[in-house]
Length: 283
Image (cartoon, rainbow, N blue to C red; front, side, top):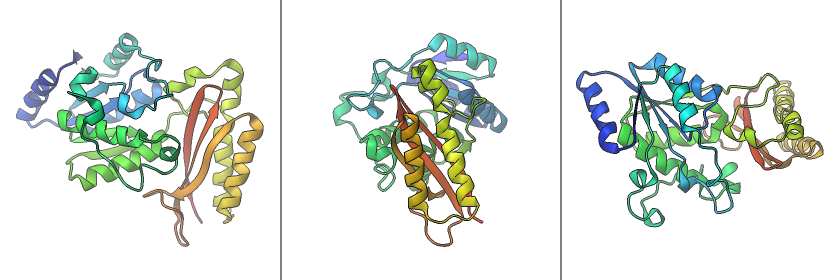
C-alpha cells in the first residue's frame, strides 16, 4: 500500500490505473478506523481492481463547540489495518490540500431539503461540510464507485442525491451497519463512552428494534411511537435529539402507501452523540 498526501501524487496513481482501464473504488473516512470501516474496504475490494481510502478530518463539518481538535487521529494504526485489508492507496491530505485559500470564503455544496432535517437541524452546517468535502474528494479521486456505511444513513441519502443532481459519474454503494455483540452501532465516537455509559449505549439499538417491530406489526401512529421511544431513551439516561420514522428513499415524512421506511435516531450519552437507524418494511 502506498501512502500519499498530495493531489499530484494521488492523480499520478489514478492516471496510471485509468490508462489501463482499471476500475477504482473509493472509501472516504476520517480515520480512527474500526471493523465497520474495514467492512467498507472489503466491499470496495470486491467491486474494483484498485481501492483508495482517504483519511481526512474535515474541519468544515464540525461546529464551533464540537470535537474537531480532540477527534481521535490514529494514522499509524489505521495504516496497518488498511494494509491488512489489501488497500492499494491511502490518501492523507492536509487541510490546505482540500481547502486551498481561506476556508471561510470557499465554494460550498448545499443539498436543500436534506441538509437541515434530522441531524442537520441539530448540527447546522454539518451536511454542507460533508457534501463539500465529498464532492472535492470525488473530483480528486475520480472513482467508479464510492462506498459509505448505512450507519450514517442521512449522509448516504444526501450523497446519493448530490451525485445524481451534480451528474457525478460515481456509483454510490451503501453497506449495512457493523454492530457490537450487544447491537451498538460501531462508531469512532464510541470511545468517548465511559464504562457505565457503554453498558447503557445498546439501549438505543433496542429502542429502535422495538419501533421497527411495532410498525412492522401494524402500528400506524408514528408520532406516538416516536414519542414513546424518546421517553424510553430519556429514562435510560440519554438526551435524545430525535427519533423519527421516515421514508427510506428520500427521508421525507411517510405518506399512506409508503412501505419502505427507516427509523432514525440521535441521542447524547455523556460526551458522545450516538446515531443509529433501522430499516422498516410496512406490511
